[in-house]
Length: 275
Ligand code: AMP
Ligand code: MN
Ligand code: MN
Ligand code: MN
Image (cartoon, rainbow, N blue to C red; front, side, top):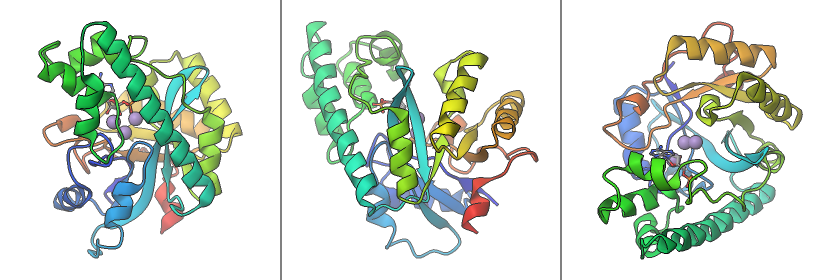
């Protein structure tokens, strides 16, 4: 079965509308899919009733921003109850935090002489959740950097001036919001945090203790040894396994819908829960 449990739409920092995302996923042979926008279920909500094609089953999802040990961590929620009051209150909190952070990022960039970043990013995000990728586009469009990658490297990435993370909730809270709504909390792309093996084990220990249910063992196209390493960690910590492309836009072969590799045999796929 072709499962993709990590993807983005225009409701956050993705390029495709929710409907276009589903059509592209179907084209790529995805059978079971979750839209996991940053801190919102608006994209999923806008298509869940309109999507009637049984060859691609859609499951409710989200990707929540949080802090663990003062680092920015992403926790994906799969099979969440989108109308659960606790989750809804959590999403409102995160959306407010995003807005405040965006204003601060705008102020910090303005201090460097890059004026108008907030207005540009807010306009680009529209009704969707505003994020650093919108500021990256601002910096490129105004010629302050030559690529979005450079924008992150110089101004927006971890430890840079635009990396404002003070207002995110602690990981335990976002796990609680997901599980209270009936969803499974999945630690997203564990290798993106660039932690030492020791630190990653400490994160997994806390994640499990706080009610986390699974590890994203496969995130996009990744080297076999990384998949095996994460599968082994999931097994050791008795966590289930998930996989997803983390698709944001066409033209990124490493994050194409439905193209993430298979889970190794020692994994317990979370989709077994939903069949
Ligand atoms: P935010 O949700 O506003 O904290 O922004 C994080 C998002 O920025 C991630 O979900 C990615 O889509 C994107 N991102 C993170 N790092 C980079 C990078 N180095 N280059 C391009 N995009 C990135
Ligand atoms: Mn993103
Ligand atoms: Mn992420
Ligand atoms: Mn993502």
